[in-house]
Each structure stands twice: as C-alpha cells, then as structure tokens.
Length: 318
Ligand SMILES: NC(=O)c1ccc[n+]([C@@H]2O[C@H](COP(=O)([O-])OP(=O)(O)OC[C@H]3O[C@@H](n4cnc5c(N)ncnc54)[C@H](OP(=O)(O)O)[C@@H]3O)[C@@H](O)[C@H]2O)c1
Image 1 (tube, rainbow, N blue to C red):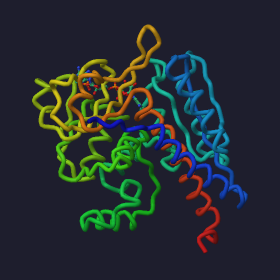
Image 2 (cartoon, protein in one colour; image 1 turned 30 degrees about the vertical axis):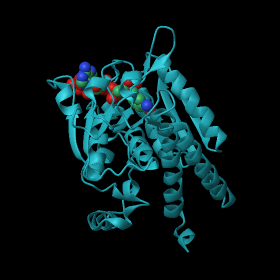
Image 3 (spheres, protein in one colour; image 1 turned 60 degrees about the vertical axis):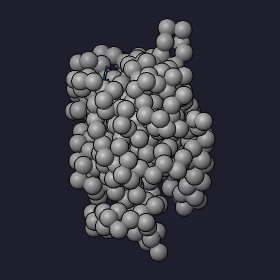
Image 4 (cartoon, helix red, strand yellow; image 1 turned 90 degrees about the vertical axis):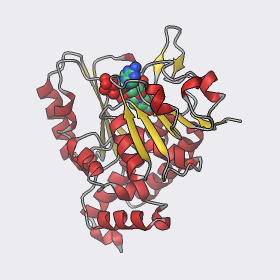
C-alpha cells in the first residue's frame, strides 16, 4: 500500500523550529531579515513571492520586498543586490526566477555574497556543494553512523566559510529522511539537470552514497533507467511524463514538478494514479516538496543570521 510523503507536515515542524530560533535571537537583540527580489509579473513567481512573505512574517522574520518592473535594467538589479549585501539587517536574499529575458540570471545570483545566498545558487555555493564543503548541513544530525561521513564532516569543520544548500533539492533530501528512507546504496534516478534543482539534487544524493543517474531531454529510453530505480525524483515541468509502467514495484517517487493547468489546478510530472499503484512512497502535488522548499529557505536565513551574529560578537560562543 502506497504511503504519502506529506511535505506540509514536515514544513510545519521546520517552521516551528525557525520560529523558536527567531524568538531566541530576538531575546539577544538580533533580528532576522530576508530580502525577496521579484522583477516582472510572472504569475507563478508572484504567488511564490506572496506565499514566502506571508510565511516569513508568521515566524517573525523581517521581510524586505523588492518588486521591480519588467523593464528594469541589469545595472539597477545589481545595485540593489549590492545594497542588500551591505545591509546588516538582511541575512538572506532570494531572487525569484525567471527574471525578464534580457537579464542574465547568473550575473544576478553571482552578485549575491555567499553569506547571504540562502538559496545556494551562486557559483561559490554550487562549487562548495560539488567540493563537498557543504556537508555539515547535509549531514548535520545523522553523521554518527558512517565512518565515511564522519570524515566528510571533519573535512568540513576545517572549512570555516559559510554556504547554503539550494532549498528545493535539500528539501527533497529532508523529506526522504523524514520518511525514513535510507539513501545509502540505492539506485536513484533524477530527471532534470537544471542548476536550481536536478543537478544539485544529484550531487546531494551522491554525497548520501546513492548510485545516481541523471536523465534529461536527450536521454534515450527514460524507462530503461526508471525501471531499475529505487528512488525516482522528477523535476522537468512535463505533466504526465512518468507513468506507472515505467516504475519498479516499491519504488520511492518524489515529484518536484509544478504545472498549472488551464483550470488552475496544480499537478506534478508524475501520473499520480498509475504511479501510486506501484510505488511504496510518493509525494503529492501540491503539498509535497513545495512547502518544504519555503521552510528550508527560512531555516537557511536563520542560520545565516546566527553565523553573522557570531562573527559580529564572538563572545556569544561562550
Ligand atoms: N516544488 C518546488 O519547490 C519547486 C522548486 C523549483 C522548481 N519546481 C518545478 O520543478 C520543475 C523543474 O524546474 P526547473 O527549474 O528545474 O526547470 P528547468 O530549468 O526548465 O529544467 C527542466 C529540466 O527537465 C528536463 N526535461 C524537460 N523535458 C524532459 C523530458 N521530456 N524528458 C526528460 N527530461 C526533460 C530538461 O532537460 P534539458 O536540460 O535537456 O533541457 C531540464 O534539465 C518545474 O515544474 C518547476 O516549476 C518546483
């Protein structure tokens, strides 16, 4: 019988921890601030922007809103990013994608200082993930069991620079672990190789000792990969791409896709009904990865505030 991986339940728990952390920081006079930058009027971005503002405020995080017109220039955006970098009240910056077509998104994310790159998409953050320097966050609580992971975490401890894991793929790992999935040694297939989701997710699963295949548009015979997969994670934006006949009996299926249908209904990449007949665990859409993504962003922002507070006042360590 298939079991649902309920992202809303995990997100509520993460948000409660964030709220407690924000309150504790407030008691020592430290406020937590998150900046959100939206350029243009993409409807999906606008609703994500509004949802993030609402949830951030509900846990006591101060929100700094930057809503810019579609014809904003790269120069104007870079100036705003630069002022956010220098603003001590702001601990993290989330840039909403897609940006207007004229704007090179890599110029924008790479302008964010790594300490405030709470969505972990800048080249420095991505590089640290590839170089296994973000292991502390990935293995924070459960590294005790594996000698190999102890070594990775020890390696991290000599690397003092701060960086964050991208929220959506890290949210997927959080969700899998919350539902007791042991990733070590599993065959994992990631469909999609974007910088924001597929590629970092494949690196995180690899760091967790899965055997990982990454599929994309040019992959011939997707089913050949999926049929042997213990864990399937799809992030393509192609509704109905994966059907039950492509999935191994008992597979764990994570649907990251968000596709808004003409009637306003949101569906994922997975044909839920047929896949649920074969899978042992599956995420719903909505209510799966989405809520965990926002909760992870807030958690990263608080982590940034804590390390900034320590930098400003090392006595807090004692
Ligand atoms: N739940 C959340 O919190 C969350 C967060 C972010 C994104 N999303 C959703 O996740 C989905 C992917 O987002 P993204 O930003 O990664 O999108 P993206 O940048 O457009 O990347 C899509 C990826 O899917 C691959 N792909 C497209 N069609 C395919 C097919 N028929 N077979 C195999 N691979 C195919 C593409 O391959 P090529 O590289 O070869 O083109 C690409 O790597 C979207 O629906 C988005 O809305 C959800």
